[in-house]
Length: 396
Image (cartoon, rainbow, N blue to C red; front, side):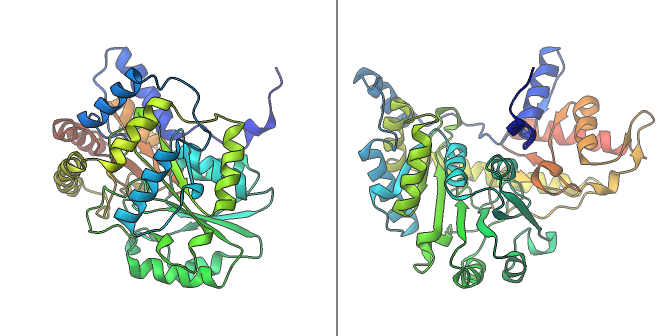
């Protein structure tokens, strides 16, 4: 049965793969502790759910504009001004079925076969695969744990070539939790100033889950703003993962290109979600603040638990809800049955022997690490880390 060669260019997301394996083992009756998925374990706030119910009663059951309802796009503009002091107009906003689709639209709008795309590691698993789908070449720049897994201006300058078309990064970062300061972004912006043909995709989906203070966007630099494609959405900050709502803020030419691609893929996002999104963007942010308070407590506890495991090296995340420890200390060791050669095998060992699901760092461009999510209850975090500690202690 002959299928498209496109399927050979990219891989299944490891995050979804591990979640799938965990569900299969759970269906067999095993007690699996899920520390793999990047999904807040909070319910969508009530005032957003009320807005969705009203949208149903008001018969928002028809096709939506490809770019999104005008009043939702206006709400996005108001949010960007309120929270980020960024001025956008509605023709610069494209609403999509999740931030992942927004990223897909962006890459497909910009990258041609043979174009180089610089992505500092570690990066979210989907960045590299979408670039490969577009025919682009991934230029992974390995960052240092000593620098908080953030690319420096010198590293960026060294990676740019005449073929560089796009730079992709996230702040706060999935999976490392790195958050770029204004000074760090300023240094990067000065490099981009010298290379006017390079676009910058800034994924800011974890904006609100920031333990360091005010969020900084690289779109704040006026001389760079026309080349910045800002990606955001409602999944993380509003606990709305299943609602599927993301958006792009970009120069009108790029926004129009994203709209054209989306028109042939999904058309407009769900009507009910869009109406609820207006309420989310313009309404009470107290539920988000409460959620971040809880993540802050979990981060503290997770760092304490990691320090109790010999051989683990981990920087403290500045944002998001993951830790990204180096685990190469355990490579080449065995428990009597299994020899662990790499992070992939370590994750499978933890899943099958400790019944804890994590994600291999190789999927994020850093093969010496694994990603562990603390988007779970404190009880499950304590339980999961206890099982991890016991399983790792058996590797000799």
